[in-house]
Structures are given as C-alpha cells and as structure tokens.
Image (tube, rainbow, N blue to C red; front, side, top):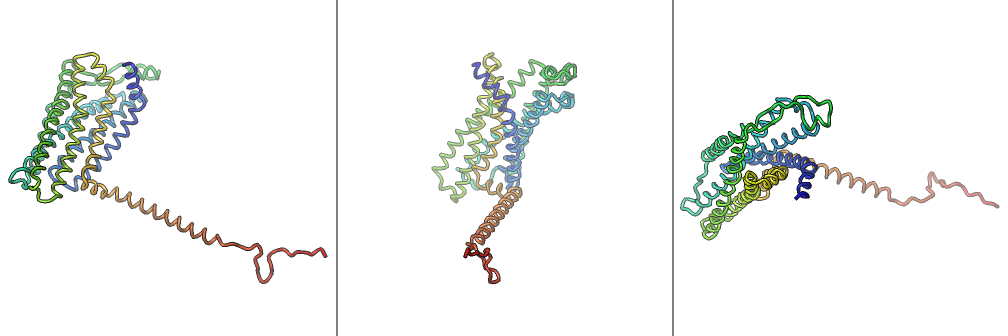
Length: 370
C-alpha cells in the first residue's frame, strides 16, 4: 500500500502536470473543431452534440486554467496569485468545473434517452416522421442546464476565500515571502461540505451511471428488435446511418459508465471509512486525468464512428489550408529532386585529360632527351 502511495505521489509530481496540459490543449482544439464541423450540419441531434462539446471544451479550458494557477501559485510562488482577485477567479473556476462536468454527464443521459425513443419509433407505423425537432432539442437543453444550476447551487457556497498570514510552502522556500498575506480557498462549513459532496457524487455520477446502464440494455434490445424487422428500412444507407450513430452513442455511454460509476462509489464510500478516504484522496490526480481523457475521447469517437463528420472535418478551412501547404511543400521538394537529377546527369560526361583547343593540345609539350 505504501508503494502504491509513493507511485501515485511520483505520478502527481512528475507525469500529471504535463499530461494534463497535453490533454487540455488537445481536447480544447478537438472540440473547437467538432463544434465548427457540426455547426455546418445542423439538426436536432447535432445541436445536442454541439452543446455537449461546448461543455467538454469548457471543462478542458477550465482544467487548463486551474492547473496553471496551481503551478504558478504553489511551484513558482508568484505573489500575483496570492491576491484576492486571483483567488476569486479560482473560486469561479472550481464552481464552473462542477457545473460543466455535471452538464456533460446530463447530456449523455439525454442522448441515451433520445436514441432509445428514436429506435423505438422505428418499429412503429409512423417511423419515417421525425419526432425529435429543434423545439424539443431546445427544451431538452433548457431542462439540462436548469437541473444542473439547481443541483449545483449548494456547491458554489461550499468554499469561500479566506485570508492567511503567508503561503506556507512558499514561505519556507523563499524567505522574502514570509509574512506576505495570501488569499486561499477553504471549506466554509463541514455539514455543507458533506451535503455538497454527497449531492454531487450521487446526482452527477452514481444515478446517471445507473440510468446509462439501464438505457444501454434497452437500446441493445431495440437494436435486436429492429434487425428482426429490418425490412422496414427503406434503404441500406439509412440502416447503416442509424447503426453508426447508435454505436457512437453507446460507446460514449459505456465510457462514462466506466469512468463515473467507480469514482462516485469510491467517493461515497470514503465518507464512511478512513481507508477509502485515503484511497480517494490519493487517486485525486488520477481521477482528474481520467475525466480529461474522457472529454478528449468524445471528439475522437465523433470522428471514428461517423464518416460524414470525418469528411466535414477534413473540409474545414484550417485543415484545407494545411493540406495545400503540405502539397506545395511536397511539390517543391519533388522539383528540387528532379533538378538535382538533371544537374548530376549533365555533369556525368567523361572528360579526356587532353582537351584540344584551337588545334593545340592543352597538355604540356614532352621534351625528348635525344
């Protein structure tokens, strides 16, 4: 157990910061690209996916800021980050991370329910009529964000900004920072902290994971039912489109179940047992990395499971510009290689040692000894 703790401590000190930085940057760029791509293919489902990508983008950007703040404050010990305004930005960042994380999970739950209803309607008489319209999509998004705001309200008041005489770790390393006032975040109330902790892990992790497990079984049942009556599909292309989209949503659901359910259960168990509490605290950096990795993988799932999204992404102006630059560079390289071959060919003619010029030999005359 002690060895595992040492490994986790080493990971948090050496590997975690650059890994989080790479995940935050790649995830932010990926979701920016997916938002721009899906915006050119607007429909109710894609609108919901755009909103989910916005939440994942905000999550990556927020993690990037909080990691930078922690590095500048705890490692560099910059006095700028000891001020109250900077502590206020960190307070907002902590609250925002809870909000966007919970919103992302609720988006996945909404996607699973919508996909189940869509598959169920395919077995009906009016299966060709669209049921999930833009109006229903807007209502769904409104319900998601209002629910998150209500559930997350107590979490905002869990922490408060307090004034401390000096930054403990920095004052030991840098004597000039002794007795320099610093502002930090602290839990305001123990009971409110426990309530918020239970509320977040129950409503944002355990309950959504259970719902996703049930919806996964229901969706798989509907897919099996649809295969038996596949003659209802008008074309093979339509069948393949539903299969691809459903597989993508199932992969996202499975990924969230694998990440959120163990974290939620471990967090709840940590409130009852000291060993579980120690494990949960030690896994803090690892859980953060897994959450960020999930946010990044959603973008790659969009690309891997949908050919239309891949084509639209490859047709993005920035990627087209990069492709044109790459083609131009390859063309210039090919021309330089061709020119070098011609030059070598022209210089490969065998030259005789004596070159006749104006009828005389260029070789020095040979004087006979006679």
